[in-house]
Image (cartoon, rainbow, N blue to C red):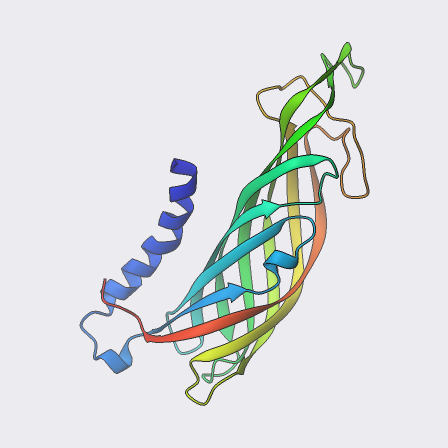
Length: 224
């Protein structure tokens, strides 16, 4: 429960502080607040997810952003019977003009996924050589953390400027850890094009992102 609640607290508390600092301003002077939905999340083959987020303007061109998603299926392992996890991405967005359309955005992110697998494990590994093999059901864990840099553009979808289509793309640097839950001496050796079963510690690699978000402008920030 704490692992689920903590990302939300990290996301909401900074926005509460900024909103509280602006309580004494006229409503029209308060910074804009919007919510956004990632349209490409359910199409992610490796880690299919449903992700939404918020954006809070702290100046005419600068915003705090945050996204939280639930990972519900995955093709990362081709024989998992269940994949569950979450992702969390706080960030900072800078618009090129006060019309708030073209922008650059930087994020830090963390993703954690558990895959339920029925397969063979190598146990008692010493210098990569197993002492024996064991067939059992286990949870294979993947954790990814990194930095992400995006550029994008928001296109207006209605005359009131309350609904926008946000297209973006960019690069990232990621660090990935993989292990077997509660079995520190075990190694899963089933490989595919996405997965190196011999890697017990971590790897660092680049990534590429692109996607679409549907953005709903809520106007002024609420008084918290």
